[in-house]
Length: 272
Image (cartoon, rainbow, N blue to C red; front, side, top):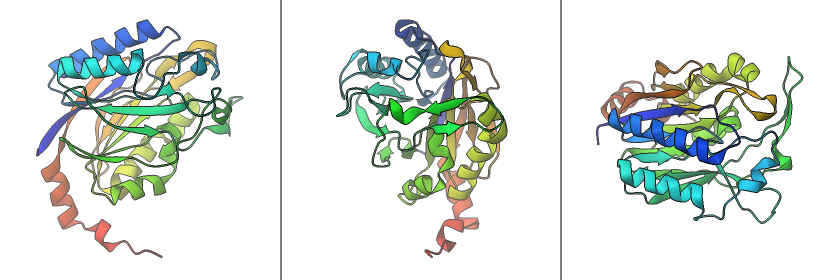
């Protein structure tokens, strides 16, 4: 498939799972009606509670549960592939579910699952914000690159964006699109969000579709928004600013092929 219409969904998620799923479904329907063949949801699309411990209360077994089943049913009903943001899925530690991204195809079949590798354990410079994601989340142990009807697809989640070696690793497997569900804070987003997305696109000569949370959430956390789709030359094709909604852009495989042939950075890389 030469060109794929990709959508990013931007949410302001609260603690009510049913309300969040309804809002997500409505925006997915709008995106599908706009021609989207693949949609990317933000991190924690199903719920954001007042603290990280809330995740344990809504965690599901791998491969089953109401949120995963809703993703599959929505994908099949709309005929759209869905990169399922993240939702908590049980790990060996009952107190620390994975932050899992489940990828569905347009028939509602699961094509892959990525568990967030890098966890946000930081004191945010320039603010009084402090996060210890590892206290309530189990880190994943492997990257994900899958072949899809839309071409090679790789996944990274939020804090993963700061680790270029992860994206280089998966890009070596021939990737057209990197999907990045996220919930960047306002402070870190304003400083680094756009430059990190553009850098990952430029250095890997890939399209990047990043879906973000926006606004005020339970517990007082504020997220940055600005869901974006970036082209392989670093051009910003779409920026949703700070409003809840969706947007679409075309991912053109021929554009990628031409750029990689004329500007063969990937072939020039030396393993030092």
